[in-house]
Image 1: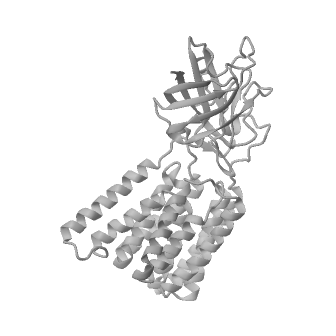
Image 2: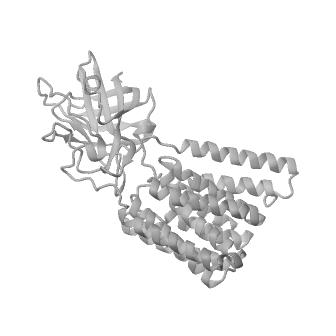
Image 3: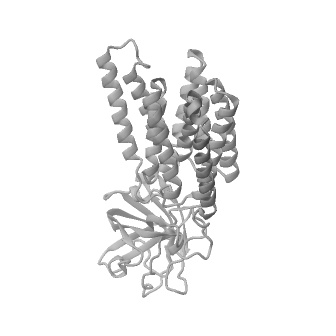
Length: 418
């Protein structure tokens, strides 16, 4: 996300308000009260699953999308406000643009948008919009970023694609919205992007499922189908207690839990009075002060107490001196992204600047980015002596292992002095 994660109470309260607004949206669709209640309950269950299975919910983008939909349905006079609401949702969760592009693209293909344009022009515009959505979705992928856990993404993805597929065949007038929700549901499988798509996709599935139930009341009134649905709810409820998010990093947590299980490099032979005090990666818009990292009893680096701060291994090489200096940090926490959340997006040639206590600025250029297994961390390669000043930036990488509550790999960024 472009903005910092909100406090838990703000994310949760906006999620609740978003559910209330979805009740109003289903009312504007002239659905029966019992169907609207079912849609709101579906959204609440999905939000609960996300809350328990990830780093929490943030209903701000969903709230703006629901508001934008209501304003758009109110007529031309409020269309500008609807556009502003959608733009705000995109700013909070950039992956939302994927759903909006697919929505506009399918509307152009079906003739619901740009009716005055020739058919060929509408088809071209619709195809370009859908193609742009695919490109944007690919650009949202962050290999080192946390993904939506499988036990959270799987039911949401299955429900989104199932409801969207049935509506596509049964109700042509809902096809644009069904395609948009299906696209957001598919984004759940993308690392990094999926976290922002989870709640909007859940809201869309809840509303579309209500529309489907309303249109096919006879089908959904069958006792056997109701019993099967209730059995699925019970099964899901039994699974929920096993779902829990990554642990909150503590001051004494070694890097294995969050910022990357790595052995400490050998101490520098001659301690230096100079210390690095700040760092910056301009290409990522990341910067901040540097704390000092120490070593646990098992020889692993201790992660910074604050997930928003990076740390320098204080017994190692000072950045700018000859040898490999080491800076580590968290990729995320239960409160949201960590200082190195975007580190997986860095590219060879990108600059890294480290300000030292003697006033000098050590400048480095990234030479390589790789993910390595925690169990087979190449200590000798990463920390081997070098004939020139070099830098190692280390954080977590790979998938999150919910059994041991730790990432399976480390992301190592290597840089050389320029």
